[in-house]
Length: 598
Ligand code: ADP
Ligand code: MG
Image (cartoon, rainbow, N blue to C red; front, side, top):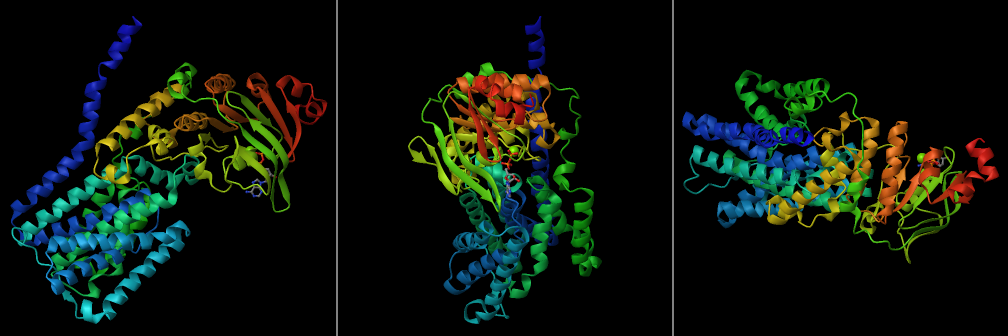
């Protein structure tokens, strides 16, 4: 009977998936159909406008990875458009290079410039970084103006002329459309890869990104490189469309347009910013008398969108996440499935803390602590609020550096201040306040945990090559498996910000499991859970340790600690008050009077 019912439930899945895929592809097919139908209007004026929209999109598609996915406020991207436009134009005009080669050269120059623009992002945040990109834009325009012998200064230079059959308005449009489709495909590939997920992790949960081993500098600079290249190619096309360029053509308004297109489209989306770009390019044409007001209109549009729909167009189109979720959902983990996930975690070395000292200003958060996490065992760390439990966990996971003492894994020291190295040592963790990416699905959040286990390079993801596809298949399957282990698989497709607090805690454990961790550090995983959920969590933690993983469990629930720990350390004011087996701790007079309240 139950098998038959399961069959009935499973049967509609396949058509359901096909329908979902079709629904996802529908807007793209519609847009492409529309774009291909445009030449039949035979109106050359529209050819120019449509070409401009396509060219802007080539730039915005790349910039979208930086702004919409990486969360970097790069507002001066007109600089790269300018650079690309001049590189291509000057090469064609002065050396007679073939326009296609000139575009490629512009892309190369843009890639280098993109990295230079992006470098400050590694140190500066938000508005400070935004100002540096503006500074770069000013410099490029001033150089174009001053370097008369090459750029023609204020008089300008002729743009590249396309060879047949791209020398007609519609011929050129089709060329631009091809570039736009290629940019869309490539950025969508990156967005759907482990690199795209790592970018949104850096944007929304940087600490969690570091704990999963994501290296922010390498990733951000690679994406700045890509976006610089695409922006400069767009510049070459832009110069061709204009047929003559002067520094005046590259106004700050243009930079604002690129940035706003992404904001009104919705960050972390590709379709949204594409629609945003089309809207902002086409709108002024319908409102020709309003051209003088265009800056005012952009500003108003931006205000309305930020206030009325902060998620942008993409959020409006996200029908799936409007469906109400089941009200009383119970989390039922399946520890038995751990075997398929952690079975190859061999018991190896221990993590040892010796005489660790750490103070914040005058407060000694940790004051000479010794502690050992052994493979296959659960080590409990308890103590009153502010006794230094989280700080201990931060020292092990590299977020805080110890002033004195040593943290070692086996014989080798664990480098302090380098949290992104811990994942490579097989050390995973969760956080006292769950760190999740609210706008991403639960499945994507969990897949982020396996970022460093991927094999394909960014270039392979860009072109959707076999290793990228294999990574995606494997990461998806493993994340689903991890979700089944913690009992959240039915919520895989749901946005993480719709989850309850307790579910986020289990989601973090699933994310940590993606590393196949040799060590797992849990910071108050039972906080906010019901009694039933706590006992299921306890069972899950025990089974994780049985697989060979060493667990450090920071907890307030004394019952849970005494039930499942092999060894317990009690902290008070950063000092060890007691250490031993649960039975010893329970009988420890000082602990009982000071902490357990017996
Ligand atoms: P627990 O997790 O046991 O509640 P913590 O490790 O979070 O305690 O904190 C230990 C002590 O260190 C507390 O007195 C806390 O105020 C202080 N502390 C923790 N982090 C910081 C920080 N980043 N800056 C200043 N003081 C801190
Ligand atoms: Mg704490």
